[in-house]
Length: 136
Image 1 (cartoon, rainbow, N blue to C red):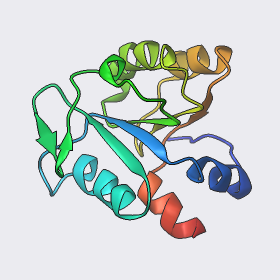
Image 2 (cartoon, rainbow, N blue to C red; image 1 turned 180 degrees about the vertical axis):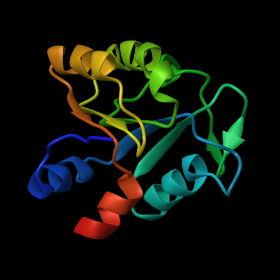
Image 3 (cartoon, one colour; image 1 turned 120 degrees about the vertical axis):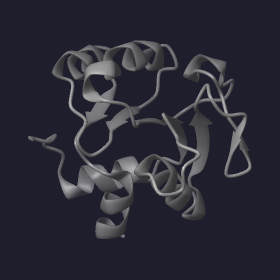
């Protein structure tokens, strides 16, 4: 699967942003959608879990949807199947994040173009944990 064409320097700049909403954050500690945001949280990121099936993950309040988060969000990190991403991106655009990050294995050209047309940077088919470790 292809991935975005950001340079390492551009990814470093994106990783300097610290307010991250994680759509599809999991309660299951063996899933990437749990241990990646846990890693981010342990490494200085302000993680907001978005999961309608949980009240709390990692001691943090869970939100049913990104629209419930009152604070500004820099990065919307999405752990959902590629075919489900469009509706989450449409909702995320209303929050005006700087970046939408589609985790490793996730790619939806229609959703990505929609975000870019709104002036939002898009990273796709990359893991935030792996990129943070690689570039730190």
